[in-house]
Length: 330
Image (cartoon, rainbow, N blue to C red; front, side, top):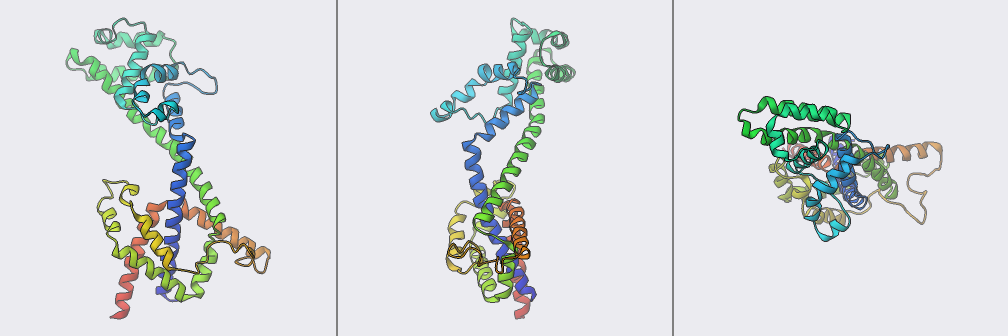
């Protein structure tokens, strides 16, 4: 097997993984939206942040925050969203005002701004005596101390406190991101496995077919390269890596993907429903079954790495293939 064939197979595999990664991410978005995963994740994060537990059912602070102080965010959304609450983001200032409002209620402060301006240390002492969750007490006391240490002008105490609560909230959102990312990875892997079995995307079988048919691998990879090199979309994405998300810069890629798939036949993907065992299970023995399962697992792991990863690999392999072809011609 020549180096050119190896690169052609790698390009073909990368493209297959890329397409299925796009499909997986789209399905994942639909599921996340339908199950309201982001809004549920945000609520879990808030519960954790204020030191409450969903298991005990004691969610007093969380409910106060949502029902009294975050209602303006929800009511500013569309009618559909209001009737099916999907609060997926809380602005730091809104959160800070909510926490200050809750403290005012719980600490029985008459005029919240004047009481905070009076002495932040006294407010910290009141918090120690309050029935607030211990975790929230400790966090707010630290926030109050930080605010007190940073105050230069007394009249800016309240504003400084707001800023410190915002900073605490923003620093803590990393936990929410990790929480959602963990769930997203699990969902992505499950979807990837379902897709590879549904479409019979067996990496080992694909490599076997492409290595035995240089015409197929060469045709497929050349078609992919032709579309990628003739499109300005890949350059556009490269130039805007830091300013645009992958989905935005890949707008319209669907047409290019269809163009590639329409030009290439006989891909070793999919089931022959008239004889489903014919493809990689003939003869039907333990060795072929293990190979198929291994091939599916490799495909599932590869697809779960995401479309941006495979698009980047695809561009690099295309460049290498072009350089290799130029050297051979010279």
